[in-house]
Image (cartoon, rainbow, N blue to C red):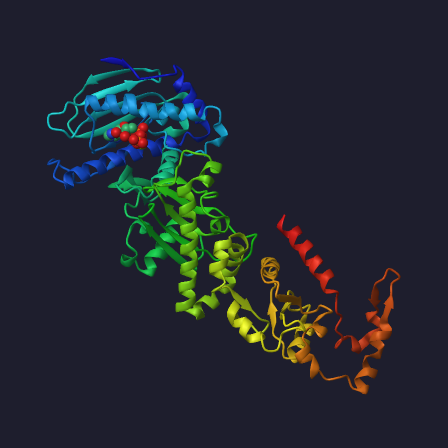
Amino acid sequence: MEGRIGVTSENLFPIIKKFLYSDHDIFLREIVSNAVDATQKLKTLASVGSYSGNAEDLKVRVKLDKDAGTITVSDNGIGMTEEEVNKYINQIAFSGANEFLEKYKNDANAIIGHFGLGFYSSFMVSDKVEVITKSHQDGAKAVKWSCNGSPEYTMEEVDKDEVGTDIVMYINEDSKEFLDENRISELLNKYCKFLPIPVIFGKKKEWKGEEYVETDENNQINDVSPAWTRMPADLEEEDYHNFYHQLYPMADEPLFNIHLNVDYPFNLTGILYFPKIKNTIEVQKNKIQLYSNQVFVTDSVEGIVPEFLTLLHGVLDSPDIPLNVSRSYLQSDSNVKKISSHITKKVADRLQEIFKENREEFEQKWDDLKLFIEYGMLTDEKFYERALKFFLLGNTEGKKFTWEEYENLIKENQTDKDNKMVYLYANHHEDQFSFIEAAKEKGYDVLLMEDPLSTHLLNALEQKYPEKRFVRVDADVVEKLIPKADDDKEKLSLEEKNELSPVFQAIVPNGKGNFIVDFEDLGETANPMVITQNEFMRRMKDMSQMQAGMS
Ligand code: ADP
Ligand code: MG
């Protein structure tokens, strides 16, 4: 039998090839995931008693035949009758592909690069595709559908013993790279590593003497029940660690993990890990892998989760994230928004939980967590609100306080004349050492905020709380700020004054409205000396340094 696919455009196949050129390796993902779907459907039918045949040992096989120039994907799943091939392959699959191209033909750049074009994506790499299939239904006859990329196709009855489907792709001239075993392994590893049904590619190989030799054992490329698909109660800490190393074999141990498991009002599973983050330069963004029903989609979750969460590692799996749309569309999608704020909440909850249950551990890991939390607070209002409970301020003594604890600590003796609380901070422990010591001697506490992000956060806090003051420990206002302590400040003795007088003599105007200090002349006296700087000037300088660092 011959037929014509329900086409609106004669040129569909050239268009498919052209549009998808940059991403043609997804064809294998699409064909293998269809095969997996087919086996799962059969499993479901068997489990409800609608199929009495063999539904054991379901699997998908990928075969490479270099001589014939073909890649074949075979499954022992549900199969299709001739009618079904007509419906699902000639009409439905086609209309999906057609609709997709109609929608995006003027907007190729809007395509994120991964989408479910499905069965027809096989034509990106093939001159001809055959579907040889036998339905699970009683007495069904096997059929072979064949199409060479034009809207014309043929269908004939064939002999096939087993229920299931073979998809044979005759690889085209431009796609010969896929007739290489390593290339196929690479694709399967990328897209199919966690599919729920065994995917077999050839036989396992063993190193014997000087070369790899094939064994009798099937080479299964996937883990059918990766950690994120299992119940948190069934997993040990070790399982989470092992899974992390499955994803990132070279990475350091993660700090914490968060197991996500939501089925309403959207479907979302996954495990997120806090990696060790030492500084912004080292940070590897976008290491989260996004899956849809265990099929790999992308390892760039930008636009799907808030910016600061892209610092996390791990896996998200949601069939509710639309895959065949542009990033800008994704950001406005209501499901994506919900998912994104859910993840933010979960991350904050988890941090709060660890903080409450094991503060010691939390404090120990604070240096690694800090960057992430501060970044989150600066860029995400909701996260900021939540994080105020576990965000830690460290002082120059190495003690850590929550925002509230710190307020209680300083409210007694660190208020200025207007009753504003004064937060003294140092941003360079060594350089400001003498100022820190001087402030401590007066009974003040000094925070240590050495990271650029901490200083950013400080500015944000200051804007948020106009009733508080954040003052750098070497600012010239420190002395005047805190009157209570000021009152019992010891005056300099006459001797001390004499001792310091060279300091004042060494200060000479430079003619530009500033003073310079001649250290050479000072000798020993330079040691106890404290030079204050104008607070405003300091802050401006910090800001400009920070901005330079950010851009
Ligand atoms: P989707 O997978 O999104 O439904 P596809 O274009 O990938 O779209 O596939 C179209 C349809 O073809 C599938 O829904 C299924 O009914 C049928 N099909 C494709 N591959 C197979 C297969 N290996 N076994 C059985 N049916 C299949
Ligand atoms: Mg499909």
